[in-house]
Length: 411
Ligand code: PLP
Image (tube, rainbow, N blue to C red; front, side, top):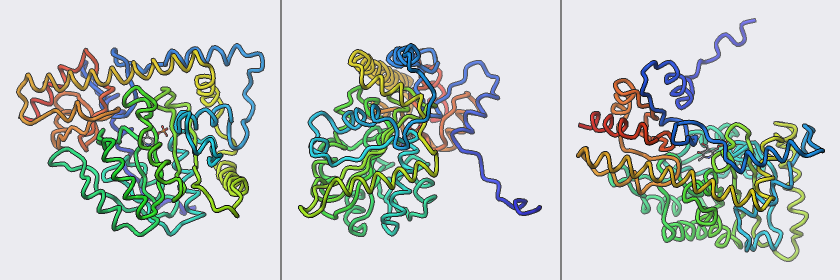
């Protein structure tokens, strides 16, 4: 009877708790810069025109139904999804070195990676960037893996700590696992430039580390899928003879399918010695991935997968989707500039250029936890206590208010 009476009460999830506090705030002008979800210029969630069209097509299909998918998901999603990530000229695809299965959005793909590592190479250390998306640690440690961190953000210069990063790669035990944000790093919004990526990935090759790319924002950062896949594609090229690469792909942000949980898990094998049969290795891996899905979800969710499959397979929808990503990314870039310019014209102490230099959904503003608290209390501007602001929450109607509020708490 009392077995669960002493279960520890955990604090509420910090980000979802912001939403909760905000819904209880009766002030008229309140601004949500918390959770990373795109909003249009009137502050509303945006259903992408490509998605609306895809939904229509699905529902008009005479074979429309709600049957279970296969355990490994829809191949009409996973095949073109791999192409989106790896590119049309991908050697890994041409050489048949990939295994792709559907996942429960990006989080499910990460969870699948953690499960797979835990049964195949449990002793390896998993290196996460410092800082990183809070869920990374819970996901990997939840599967019994040990995590460590590599330096990433230099708070003083608000730039990449490349030296610390490279040093961690060099000193990590040979063959460790490095979790890399493919683009639009969460929470800092700071990505290595192309030259820095090459340096980082070459250092990883030297130590024969394994890489997991977390690709949650492809196309959302720059508006261009190829540009945002630079690191993934270079990584695959450099590691092609070295170690397997896992890529966790989310369609939450770039297709605006947050709640539908559409995503894929891709594993790319390196070239094998002649006596190893690639097809056998792939079949074995796929069977293990299927077991993970079977025991946790039975089958992956269908609706979002069908929508994304339409978007990726129908050329006119794909074209519209590309335009939709430009709409989202350019509005965010515009908001970055409006906020920076407003802070400059208010003569807010400090340099605010990092707001425009950072990319993707977030800006690591550099505001202290105390300033963030005052922003919420005195100005109804809500963001994570780390000072991470979701720029998608800004719009032409609230950016002035936010700038004045930041100016007030900084002064
Ligand atoms: N990885 C990173 C870095 C993220 O920021 C997110 C979402 O915020 C995800 C993965 C997973 O998102 P989802 O499970 O909604 O696809």
